Length: 85
Image 1 (tube, rainbow, N blue to C red):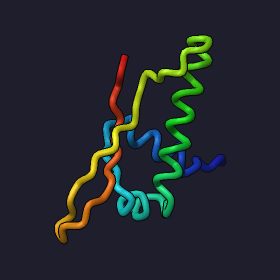
Image 2 (cartoon, rainbow, N blue to C red):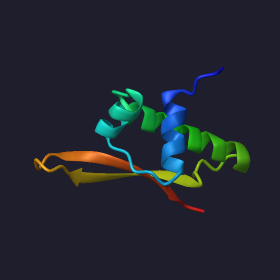
Image 3 (cartoon, rainbow, N blue to C red):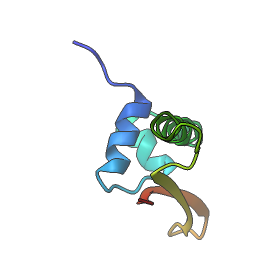
Image 4 (spheres, rainbow, N blue to C red):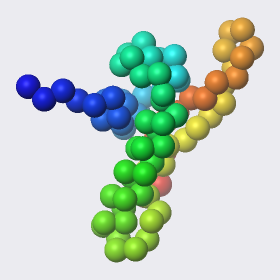
C-alpha cells in the first residue's frame, strides 16, 4: 500500500475547500513546515499550468494566505485555495 505524502494530503485538503493553519497541519499530519509544503504546492500549480498552456506560468488555482488572529492575539497564516479560472 502506497502512503500519501504530506504535500499531497495538504493539497487534497485545500482543494476540498479546507482552510489550514500551521497548528492544524501539525495536528492532522505531523507537518512542522507547512509554509514549505505550501510553496511546493504553488510550484506544482504553476508547472501544471505551464504544461497545459505552453509557456504561460499563471496557474488556474492560487493558494491564498490570510493572516488571522488567535484567541491570544497572535497573528498566524491561514491558507486556502482560490480558483482563478
